[in-house]
View: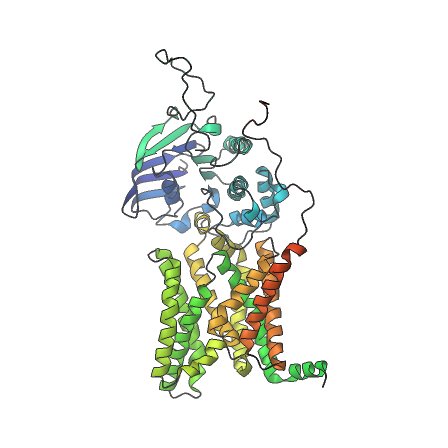
Length: 259
Length: 304
């Protein structure tokens, strides 16, 4: 049987004073589309970073395609994994074009140079996210949403079997969200495994078949996507239950957009 | 004697030939590492390493004096190389462990390096005046051996700095992504630190410890004024580095000025001139409005 894309057993991560994550048992078989949900500070990003080997693992195991990300880091097939980090303000001091940033996504543990077809592949990835015309401009002058799309292209250029996205919908406009949903649907149809950190399913609702909800650093729910909490659901959604005892005209305020 | 005769005399002087060769080597190679350091926002790392290199100079001096070698400073540059590498790797480890912030680690090195150098040179029977050549550069006294040493160090810096550019770019642009991509981040970090240390050691002869970082950083700052890409920034900085080094050194052939200071003042002056002129040089892009044509997320103006 094929190795699962992701498997953790009793994963524990300590940062600073206490455990950020503890007792995380998670298996994601190849081809699944999984959302990682939870409030701010519940440990979603830390779990993803532990899987990527960015934060140290205190105890337990985390495996990518059967290889331990801590003990046998060099054996992990990193070229099969695409990672889209949570966008933070650009910290680099030297200008870099979108093309240069995306081409860096072609590197992996056994590849320190991007290879021959790097240019075409990078341009194709930029075309996928709709930034082909701006390939030769510095990402420093890009808007937040455009920078986010560059980071997505940098992961797509690897042609990953496993794509991990940390808050890809944060701070981008509706058209870009729908475009991203379209890209992910295509990848999903091609058999790409998806792990997406989200606050709410939003535009990706049709795509996600399984949701893992974290609270206080452990798994609260693992199964079909749960309905959104009141006030966090979509403004136009259908109520499946009646509200007879509510005064007419009372509506739940929508606090979800961008927050 | 006309200007061109003097220029010909300058180029005919073996001392000046050696100095010019080192100036070109340093001018081209220092900005390569400088580009990576600026990209990581570690522009002052070169200074920290330079100060530690001073302790290395003094240690080399002490070892030379103890072994009875003449001249006493024959081991000074090897000592600087060893100390600079040790210091750079130490900064990298401190930074990686995250126990001390990068700038505090640098401050510790700055002061420890200078104080250690002054103490050790005294212990070796010298005075701090003996350090002056290393503090401010002594390119006018280089030997043939110095030229070969600089050429070897420059070849290593250029070979690795340019050959591994994609990996080093990925590392310096986004270290977390580089790790997630599977790159050997730790080894590459140490490599950057060691290359920065070699760059400091080789540049020390030209401008001295106190100005060593300027050769790495200022050409990059100048290149950034016009370049849009990482590759163009590095290439432009290499050309600017070579030009200011050769020009500055040549000026000191005509006027009795400190070569290191002349080179750095020239570079900083070039930056200032370009920064002022930039708005006049850069033309607006054709096409006018740089904003993408996308739909608004909110409905505006329909109620009116």
